[in-house]
Length: 353
Image (cartoon, rainbow, N blue to C red; front, side, top):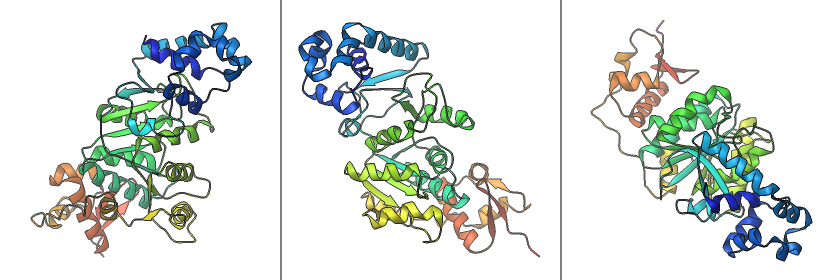
């Protein structure tokens, strides 16, 4: 059990000790003095915190958390420790300690994709396409493993052969929603699932805004795809602006409830993007790779001749096309009326009369 991690986690158990206060102590080199001689800092930390330190209750609680995490095989990173993401450490209130399963890439360029849980099929498809394309260009995709846009963003990153991070509003051993247990396992195999909350913590409404600040801290930019007036994605986007991160938003029709969030953020200074090429241009990578003219749309139509619907994953296997190229070709065929998109990102050839 790492002593430094234990001390930071001990401070996190104290009443009145939020992440910003602990960050200030870390930067001032005051963690060890407060832990070792709390009586000298009674005016600073307050009577309830002093009692919790002197009586050993805070350290005992921290030990329980660390032992539970170690038993489950969860790894931890403490603020100031080598490997702790520098961009996360730079925010106003970084988590003193967070737990993770999987692996964290040092120096990775990260982009968050967030949006509504009750998203439309088109919104989920766009989130998946954006994540896939960005992953193909070397970006690590960050989101919250929620239903809707979040899950589609993780799926897209994996589809693009990239890595992805899922930040939870629960303990790592409590995957929420439950239907994303398999997705979480796939994320761990190609990235990491992480949380600042102790093992066994059940999801609760107040924990998700806290989760959102970690998503922001891990990224250089946040992309919003569909968000209603009460969407948590709006909290994430506003936090991103406050922390000096770029916010990109996909606009929608003014009367569409799910366009409220993106349109509002564009009004308030977010960058309007229409798709992957705009996102890449904003991120300094120019436009998407040129289309491979040697892969005509007919190659896809051949696999849809029997009119049976096929998933994107199956079409990748059947055609041998790279995901971004496949999605570009499918979009062309859809616009031409030769294929139709079904719920669940399934495609089939358009029935002929």
